[in-house]
Image 1: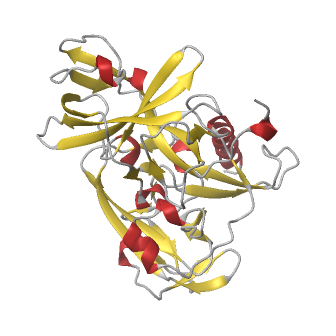
Image 2: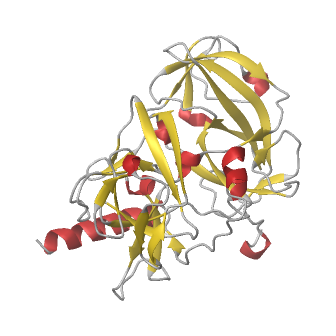
Image 3: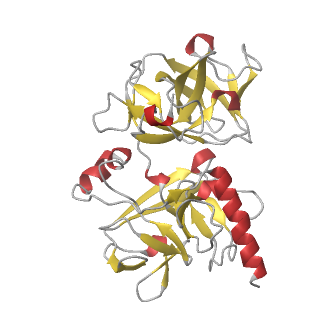
Length: 342
């Protein structure tokens, strides 16, 4: 299928490949996460400590403006930009699986089947955080799941303790901000804060915060971000790494476990900032984006949040979104520039 014929993404979500799981005890000892017919309640699964959450882009011909995964076959396909599977492959919600975590709470995963020339490949989309390296016992299989609406405000958020620059130059912890506070923006000067969304989650897997330690990029303090929060990079040099001078990089793509790392364990408070426009603001003096709210992104928000912001229709910032390899090359370049300037 040519690039021109590839379906356009209606929304994105993050999954773990079925092969990132392994049965460590039970009837299917040694097997990865497979299709419904191969699953056995009581089996104990472990997500590899090295597992990475992979973004899939979903084109949904049956969509009615919602970010919904459904069991019906043929409407949902992978779009260009997916990190798992091949663009154009059919995608189906195969089952809803319930696991018992070591602490005794339940964790639900959506089992997704993706068509390939060799047969179905499987992926898991956690509805609650699942911790890598820990054992989870399969206790429930629903092979005819109802459609599931996906909503995650932590996809674009700042961790507790991260300082935001106000219009008067003061640095204020994100948790101390109030609605109406005037925030310094790159393009529109001082702008009032329209809304603050807060969520507390178990800091595991794709919910673990990214920590960019103090002074890594010239940041005044530790910059704590959700993995999907994007940093804004302006490339002045002729040897820029993308077609445009402006580049957006997901914080999770910068993780190298040496200079930038994840901080799993316990719980994390995340704060999402909303303005009248999609803004570039400053967190620990580093340019980052605010929440983008428009027809394309509204279905990804929790329903109560989407309903609370009915009049917002943000124009997104123009720029190239970096993939993992470009993000890592940018990290190396920024660190080299930082070291040479000292």
